Image (tube, rainbow, N blue to C red; front, side, top):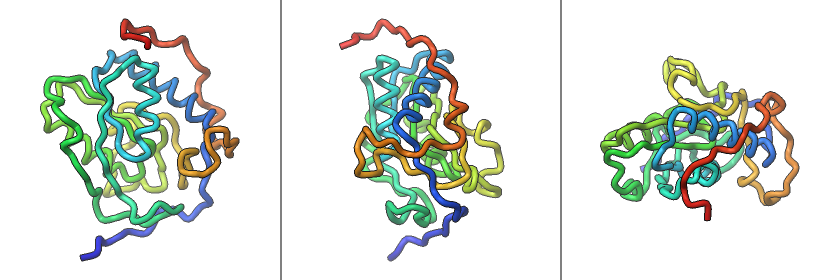
Length: 203
């Protein structure tokens, strides 16, 4: 049986986010998350969310990094159609999260369905506290009745907003040195703040 798909909400040309923009957004998310209390565990939503999850975990000094594989597009192409619901693989990879302070991270939120359903799955594991973070929200896909609330009311930490498809540097064959084309909002990313200091083993 085939999985029904939904057409993309926006047909505008995609934008490419450069590594420099990713690093600036990550630094800001790190400062904001740490300012609300240091999480104990970082969970990255595979595949795209793992890159910012690992970057954030390193900067916070957190070694406990978990993954959950979730797909919500039919293909990897630009403006790929959405499946009717996020599909999960191997939820046991989350392990035992009972009583832990967890930061759940993805690269982008469109309708917010993937992040919300994953949040509910993690919450059901008995976490003590759960926060969510994304690098980018695509407002072209964030529309009622699927997402009646504004992104800031459903996601704890949002790096930036756009209104079209985003191509991340890890989705290309250009490698980490790719210059890319920064998003319009990238110039508004706050300047790096002082590094977060923890008592974690720095090695």
